[in-house]
Amino acid sequence: MDALRDYLKNHRHLYPAVAVVAAVFFFAGMLVTAAVGVTPHAGAATPMTQGGGVPSSFANLAESSEPTVVNIKVTKVEKTSMPGMPDLEESPFGDMFKQFFGDMPKGPGSFKSQGAGSGVIINSDGTVLTNNHVVDGASDIVVTLADKKEYKAKVIGRDPKTDLAVIKIEGRGPFKAAALGDSDRARVGEWVLAIGNPFGLSNTVTAGIVSAKGRVIGEGPYDNFIQTDAPINPGNSGGPLLDMRGEVIGINTAIIPNGQGIGFAIPINTAKALLPELETKGSVTRGYLGVNIQDVTPDLAATLNLKEPKGALVAGVMEGSPAEKAGVKTGDVITGFAGKKVEDPHQLSALVAATPVGTEAPLVVNRGGKDMTLNVKVAKLGANEPGAGKSQEVSHGKWGLQLQDITPDLARQLGSKSHSGVVVAGVQPGSPAENANIQRGDIILEVNRHPVKSVGEVKELVSRDHKDSLLLLIQREGNDLYVVLKG
Image (cartoon, rainbow, N blue to C red; front, side, top):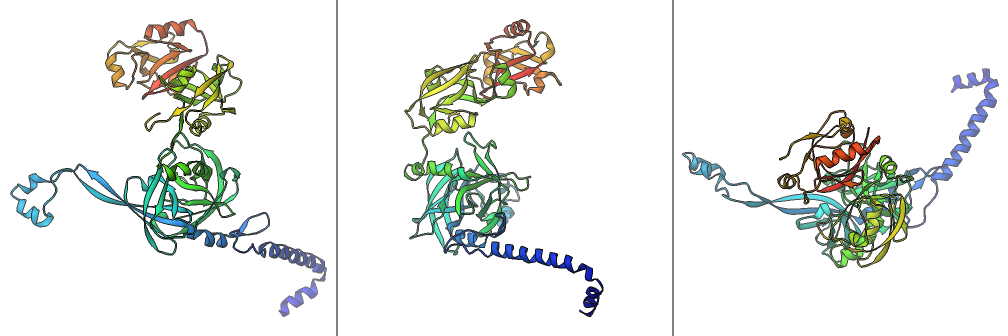
């Protein structure tokens, strides 16, 4: 203290600067104190925040929400076709074998396996929302609440296409239920909280932000995930993703195993639209058009004379489907449905799925550069709906395709229902065909919008159309899609 007093006495010229710094820290302290000293309304789950809305604590939110999150333990009966070991039992060592291993089954049998996940109570009567993959095939379900109480539960509704399921606690309530929010209001960059049971650990809370919305990760036709960097691990599946109001905006469902801070949640608005049917009917009824659709890439847009790469390109029309009856043709680009614009295939799938069966709706398509409106009557989506011949080189071999005529036997091997088209027998490395990801075994159905039935027809079309690009309609593993080759 004496040394400090002597230093200040000899450095009086620093007093003004010290005073300014002291003032800055004083007022800054007042601001911080004012920010973190805000008292939330009684019973609110709002976290305390610093300036700029950065949470200083998630304690209130976690404490309020944890009782609504449950641990789900599932027992499944798995079948096995592993035979027993009769040869060993009948061998000279048979008696010793039985002494150590007993009598082994001599035929197909079954065994029990166990799994775990999470869920969130959405009604005080014990209704729980979780993932379908958590309870699929369950023979026994036990739900554990935050207070360690255990209850039996049963499945009352499942939807594999969105990976959602509803189960019911077989116990006397009331149970504390979570509030369901509005996932459409969630903004990229907002804080979120994930609660679940990772690796079987009881209620675990992690925090992060909404990293992205509308993510398509290849899980199904209705992909529309919220991406978050709030840590999600195995066992978190089915648990809630909460906003800072304490409302559920998503159901945690998937992770990228080798990624860090990349998890995905099903938007709660998707779940809310399905809950009435899941709770009353046990399944979901969806609308159906009967088309195979794909994204419109910039290359496809240029080839199809479109102004911009938007819409859903029809790569195939199912026989007898609503789309076929309405006059939809392969190569059409669907740009509108039921009065709403269609930006991409996933949006169209969601719109059609949400349309009541039997509804007649206008369908806007672009055909040959011109828009036209068709009337389509939406049907019900079913549970399962979505080498001979000499090889020849396509003339002007710049495309790098080796083709051969299709035969009934070859069509059967390739899983094709039709005997039309030409089979890709080989792809030249470094060629436009390889760059466009054409694969051996693909079946070419059209060349520049013209159907083809033989290698000769392909050669004629390629030699006739002197273009820098080639538009092919191909069939791969039963699915049709358009591909552009650029010379």
